[in-house]
Length: 333
Figure 1 (tube, rainbow, N blue to C red):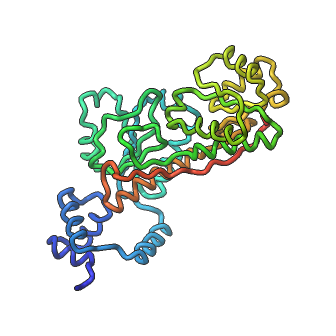
Figure 2: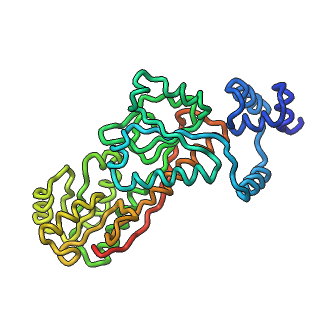
Figure 3: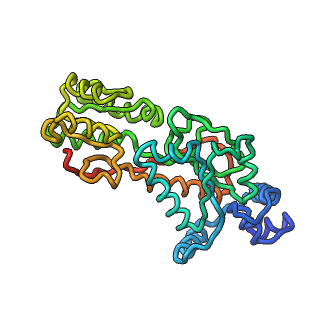
């Protein structure tokens, strides 16, 4: 039996090799009907791309300035203000998305699902009409865990794990290692009573992985301070610091650092502070950086890989790609 090739698939489908190649890679310019017919015939013949040829072509493409290939959609369930306010890392996702799509030769179109023009639905049809077959889902705002969006015709990946339904491929921080690394640095600095201040919405958005990491590390150390797991004002926060006799605080919001300083608490003399969503603009603040630009870029890579494999819709076996955090020193430890 002869080895299946692009030409044998083209002959069976009554088309040409270029069309078959584009269809198998999920590229624009080929109708959905033709793509489906080509993919079905490739499966019937047992066609598999030669990995050595694929690697060579990838190397050749990487040596050139990428030409425009298609446009990806960025799906937002927040409005523009919410997107910027959710947490400091959000402002860096855009940079990572645009840098990576540009490197790969893709455009990026932002879609605000709450915009008035989508009130009656039809966003999926509109995206398809613009030739958009791949979408990245931005982190959801607090209190939101699902989208009214039909992913069946799209290659898709999410940034973070705030989307609970449906479960998609996603790129996310390594939540556990982030907390663990912060605790390791504080313990190395001589701190023994480290408290975690965690907003309920942020805890939910991480699927309780921030909290799970903290409690797990506490258990290994034989116990520790009670975490602050509610939206607290300055008075409540400072009372918690006193009651738990803390010598260090970890949080995602530098507002806590400001409250400590405003109350006359010496930082780091009396209480050290670590921000576990540390961003580049937080000069002088010690913390754990989650590399949001790299997370966003990884989500783009996941979508593009699905386009190349002609995969669409909600995956049967969702994958989570976690990006390793790194420590950023500062004057607060």
